[in-house]
Amino acid sequence: MLQLHDLTFIPFISSAEIEESIKKLAQKISVDYKEKIPVFLGVLNGAYQFTAALTQFYPGDCEVEFTKLKSYEGTSSTGTIQSLIGVDNLKGKDVIVVEDIVDTGNTISEIIKILEKEAVASYKIATLCYKPVAYKKSHKIDYIGLEIPNKFIVGYGLDYDGLGRNLPEIYQLK
Ligand code: 5GP
Ligand code: MG
Image (cartoon, rainbow, N blue to C red; front, side, top):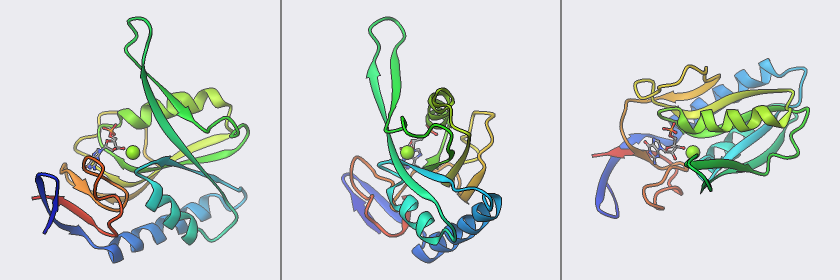
């Protein structure tokens, strides 16, 4: 059992299982990128652990970059505008976006929209966790570590109100 703020969580996915799924992904990606040097673009903060592990297990040359999605209010009626910090040096590169979790898909759609303006050579999406039941977009998620039910999880980079990111395993809400 794990207590974070007001919520209780129970163990869900062990660190051994997480590691196994990441090793498989790294292997699979390296086959697809045999002739290329991919840039793994980790989305902070949530994907920091996944990005570290995925690139450590990656059996080939690769580059590692990080980005952060910044939301701010528009000046007109456009509502919330998103921008990505640190993606201005990706021109002509083969980018693999590394996400902690894809839920509804809204975040990844925003990221794709922005990447398409950056003149990258290609891009694919890798996520550690994917909630197929919650996903509302049509864009294909290229590399999935773990498919999970529509439950709130923490650990291995994922937080609940700032806490839980550092945990080496994944917990689900009790
Ligand atoms: P989406 O935009 O796909 O709905 O959700 C993406 C973001 O919502 C993730 O990057 C993550 O920050 C947050 N999120 C979605 N599901 C979970 C979850 O089960 N646990 C945690 N901690 N965050 C989640
Ligand atoms: Mg995220």
